[in-house]
Length: 267
Image (cartoon, rainbow, N blue to C red):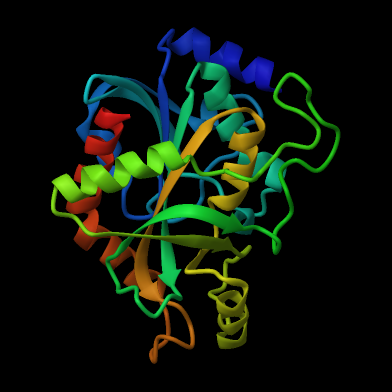
């Protein structure tokens, strides 16, 4: 399947990206603001999963950020859309086949850590994926990676250090912590959030961890930022809505986009 997909991509562009960037909810406009070389819609790629989530355009954007060749996922696919973990990981593996060596993940998340506020940027230093299926289940493709990949440093300390120092230079505050992925699409119950807090999670969401697993398996250097768009259920005293998530993401998007661009320039 990957061979067929990369062959199709090469009929559209011979662009070789250095960095792959996955844009979470509310951040899609960043892809429209770069020096674009070309775009490829997911729906045109053979056997490729298509984004159905609100505000996710569903296309690859090829271009430059700070003189770095990048491929951007303008919209990701989620387990809650009915896709398997393998399908959700397919775009990550395809971007590796395109030539990218660094994967930069972003997401919108619910804040669990009591020291976090709505609008905070959390650099991900680890994740918990025990509540969703691994994208590595099934027959291993030895051309991608080993059967039992090490996960002791999924998120690169080198890249995280660059993000923090870049943010400091820009007077942007960054936190750091553990992200936990649930399947969704429902927001979590108060009991589930209490459990997540006991397990050591600082933020919670419906993506990212399985993408990072697949990326580590195929030798990407990975980093990620989780934008706290709302306080998690039980911490927040009001019902959580998708509109609240989108509103917060759009409000802080200018700062988030500046940080992403500057960090990529420093990688």
